[in-house]
Image (cartoon, rainbow, N blue to C red):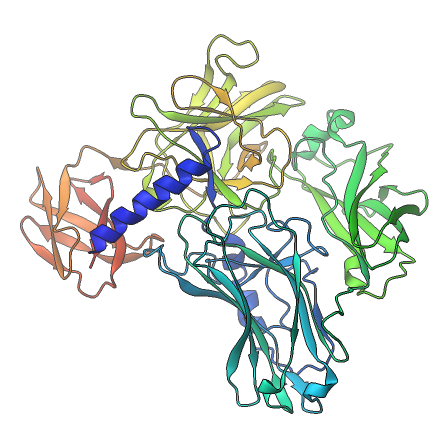
Length: 626
């Protein structure tokens, strides 16, 4: 039965992803994990100790810069607070619901088609002890399915619950997903929900809770909510927000890259710096308004102002409309820093003399332009994954174009991997560095400068959610164009590694792919998250893949219920290691030929097994525990 379910699931995934293919060879898929949530585990632990009884009004538009909910307003921390998973929010920041738990991995890592109660977002207790149904209490919020992620299917839903004075949560509203993929991302839609006498007023510890049901299926089943408001003396027609706010982050200060070494920047600053900075402002009032705004850019290290508005600028907006605003940027001189220094330019956009009555927190938006030791086109967050459909005859290759303003030393490549099953750790790959690609920019043949040994992919380290691979020998590169990427051969699954895809990066993604011997420009919008590491020596966060196909072995039976046996050649004994799909070691030891081991303590699901004989480790194999 388990095998039947797995086979059916594979067929379903194949059919849906085939429909989503931009071409027959490259795909955008779900990201399937969120390392940002995992890295804030301590912050969540501290926040959970916060309990407070609130009074009305209750309001949150998720404008803050933390990826977890504000603990002064919410008691659980499973949703993701961000400004990248949404499209045209009411104000900057939303709460994203998906099928990823508080540590950023799927709620069910094996049964991906099973619908789970997934994320929840529960308010702190609110004192309604002096209230009754006659006070016209309404909760309003905006929601958006899909956003920059993937659409929720018809088996997925977003729900709202109210807690009565007896401590029971009662469902008061819900919306289901969709039967077919959405061709256009829906706009945010407002919902007005009354607090009725079913709450058994007075209620001194009222709470409300958003919950989504989801199956990982082929997507993350994304919902976004924004602008949550609960107050008295409202009615069903009280939909006016009465706020003017920023809805996006200020633009990067660089033309093409999102980050680069500062010494590379100052080698040609006029080419790298943007001519203007941009942001978006929304008028969420019913009246047309003239909105005053300004901006300022400062070097954080020295505190020196670099650029800014000479005075207030004005934009006229009709009611319930959004406009992109631009301001020219002119910097006459850049501060001096030693080679290799990390530098931050901070840009603040702020509204002044706003006639709205909304919260002041979304009237100022801050964005840092970081200059580090790498080249990047992405903003550090992945909304989807990028992967190739591999062919049996030729390796699948990805190459991303970068430019240098002066000669530099390439130390390695940092890669952001998307989650997948089989677990990405068991898909070895090679890092390739080129100075030219055949058929691209007039070059007749590839010019391969460096190719690594087989490498073993892994998930994020604790620094920036990228995994850093160092070249065996640092590569001195001249000024100009080079290409960095990966290659890997066909495996049983037929698809390549999943790489993080930042879909917020609009325009050329500088990527090329090659699965049939011909380099082709990528047609998928967004930045594939690979970052060349430049300059001084840096520590790596990964090692070579030590697996080899020389070891011939099997695990039997498979699927198995209580015991398994390893069949192998050319050795009397072997060491084995059984891990879960996250790579955690669960059972290990030494075994002789024709002996069995007990796996009855493992919960049903998928595991991976490695076997080492004569100091040689074979490729991992999947084990299904019934």
